[in-house]
Amino acid sequence: MENYKELSRALEIDESDLDGEAIRYSSCFFRVSVGFREAGAAFNDASDELKRIESEIGDEANKKMVGRVTVAIRNDYVRGHKDYQQVRRDYQLAKASMAKWEALVEAWRQKSYQLRILADLWIHEYWSTETGSGTRRNRDAGSDRQERNTSRVRKQIRQASEAKDRR
Image (tube, rainbow, N blue to C red; front, side, top):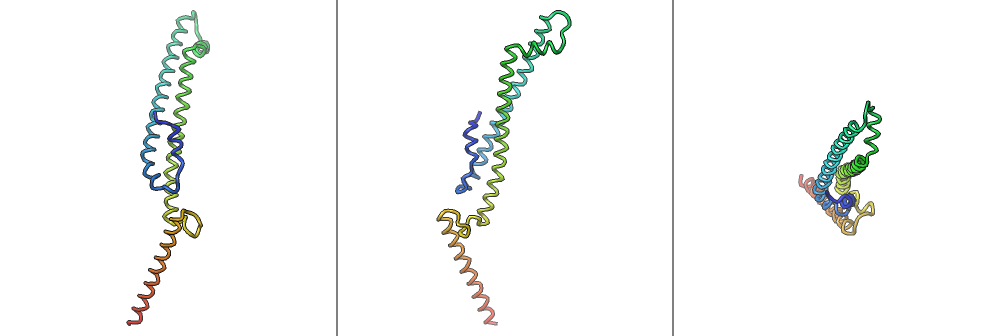
């Protein structure tokens, strides 16, 4: 089974490396899904084992006890048996493990939405020079972009006025 703690730590998003996060997302989500499937299979196996041992111990109770055996007496005998208690503990552990992996899968699904939102914010220049955020490189890129846009607009205005003068 995959390392649950490693995949839990990988949930944290490094907003300065969104492209790397997006690239790693698919492989990590696959690993989380595999871990969840394995935990689910272990839970199913534990559930089957619990039913099997309960049936065996119940049959043993029916053979040992003379006369009419009520369901309550049979169930008390089964639940008090040490083998049943051990298998029940294993079942509870498998159930808890599956629940943890299921929560991790949901968290990774949520991460895809968070990555999408953060990417949209970057695309729409949320972290630009006006907000005072971002690295120096990002701020410089933002001011370069503004200068290019300004010069492009000036050029368009100049061309439009020259065209107007020619008419």
